[in-house]
Length: 277
Image 1: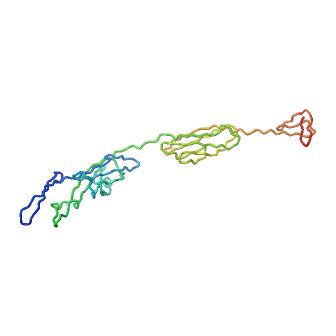
Image 2: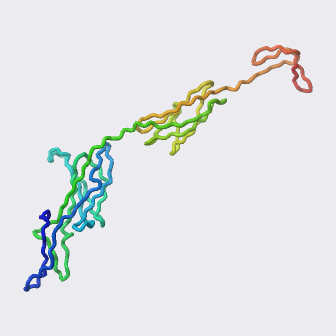
Image 3: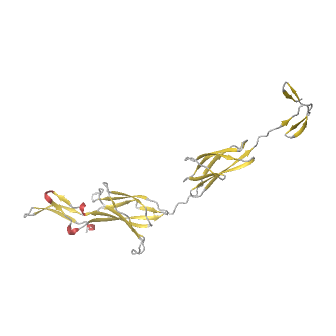
């Protein structure tokens, strides 16, 4: 049995003469290691880069070895759907198989590294060869891998909103600019009820219409988890005041914004211009 590290004696047979002992070999099973030996099981599922390395008795990478992964949830092995097996992979020149492993359940998985017969059947010069006894198919070595449940990380961090606008304006259109950032990423930005586009670095600029008098502008950003960050701006729209003066030539009454005002003397025209005393 390979687990007992059996010894094999190699003889040179000279036809009808005596057998000459050449050397004694010991069968040592290869080893398979898993890195990492523990992977997270998450919902939704996420892949983990796992490397399976198979080495021979001398610690060298063993190429051409078939590696498979299998597992059982612990329920009845005869129950349909509870047993799981992944497709096989074959080691490369360094004895490694790289796998993007997505475990379907938490628990223990079994790694099997099968070394086929052709790794040991070697033709020798003069048509002599070394055959394996009793139709032995090869060596099968195993390892285990553990998948542990990992609770999803809940994002509770609010987006950070930086925004600015003039405190006082004399026109109804105001430019609001700034930048939004988040530990994961901002998915939407709003100024009031208006959705705003922003650059990949989070910067933005938009025109917003305000009403006469005091205005409150809210800039709100959301991330994928629904966290909300906001910034409130205060903008006052002061409509410029216009004074309308009407005079009548020869009259000592004029109107200012519709109100009658007494002047010292009637208005008159001098040198082509209206003159008020």
